Amino acid sequence: MLNEKAINGLLKASPEKRYRNFLNTVTDLEEVFAGLTIDKKVFVTNDEGLILLWPYKEFCELMLSSNQIPKAIEIHDFLEYCRSLEDSVMFSIFPTNENSYIVSAKQLILDIQEHLDELE
Image 1 (tube, rainbow, N blue to C red):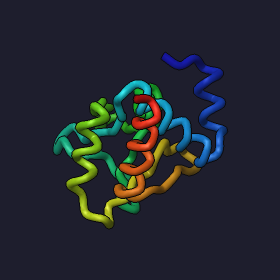
Image 2 (cartoon, helix red, strand yellow; image 1 turned 135 degrees about the horizontal axis):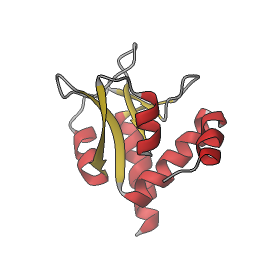
Image 3 (cartoon, rainbow, N blue to C red; image 1 turned 120 degrees about the horizontal axis):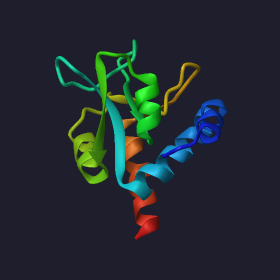
Image 4 (cartoon, one colour; image 1 turned 60 degrees about the horizontal axis):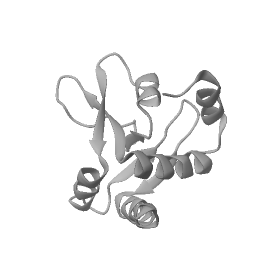
């Protein structure tokens, strides 16, 4: 569980720093957080159609609206999901009200797998 100082620090960090934090955290904890819409049970996207992902439940809850719920996804299940996507699918990693890091599904798979390999 993150304290207020850690949350505020990450909110102020650059998108690149938050992406590095995302990779380190999701590979260490072996889960990714996404938002699901309550009614359709589909991933929450932004106005550009990017799938939103966070490394911590606290940020997921902070950024979602009242008709969306946080969902933890086991990291290997998430990688399998990403492998099933078209190359054009993009993710918004660790979005805040200010910005986020944008990455393709293909690059995200490579980056997560590289971090997982380092842990093994």
